[in-house]
Image (cartoon, rainbow, N blue to C red; front, side, top):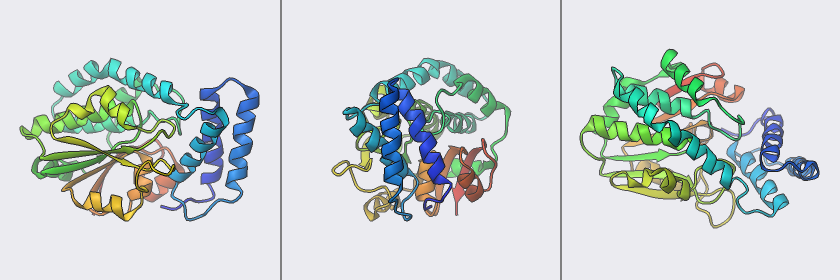
Length: 288
């Protein structure tokens, strides 16, 4: 997907939310907003939406002089999710279909997003996931592929949310009764708002899953990895039999990838239109 006009006011709201998250200094908040507005004046309309988030991240990083201004917030998000992990595990283990339940919870975990929300109510998100059906639910195909695939690539999204992803992958391994030959976890190669970076993977223990490796894509800064939409990354995708993309940004970037699974909460009217589901929907979509 390419950016649209509606992406611009959304970017400004994202910038304001995140400026307020990292500083109480009104002068610094104003500086961040002015610099974001200036950057948007010369925007390239061929960008993918996540590159606007990278723009906001770059402005905040430069304005604060802090190379990782969201480090503490990512840690708090991880701790918040880890705190309820035992409860989530019990929900999965006591359910009729453990894998489907873990998928629902993973989609609900996508509510943890600095770009879209400030502080989600995780208990409410979990209760809603168990109460309401997925608006798009390609579960049977996902289950079949999860049982048969030997190699999985999983594009992670946000800190905190990855605890829900950990639970999903653990449940997949349990239902399979055997490990994947390889699990490739794709994260940003450098800080970008609340997006997962390698230290977050290690912090929540995702790297301890069998046959797991981490690959990094760019956060918009040179030297942090290949561009998300590059042929290099597309090549990684084609090497795996099971392809899972978590969250809106990964849907926006890879919606043209066939034979892939997208797990997300719809938080944007453009995505709602593209995916064919209302705002707030929880989604498990297979692209054919």
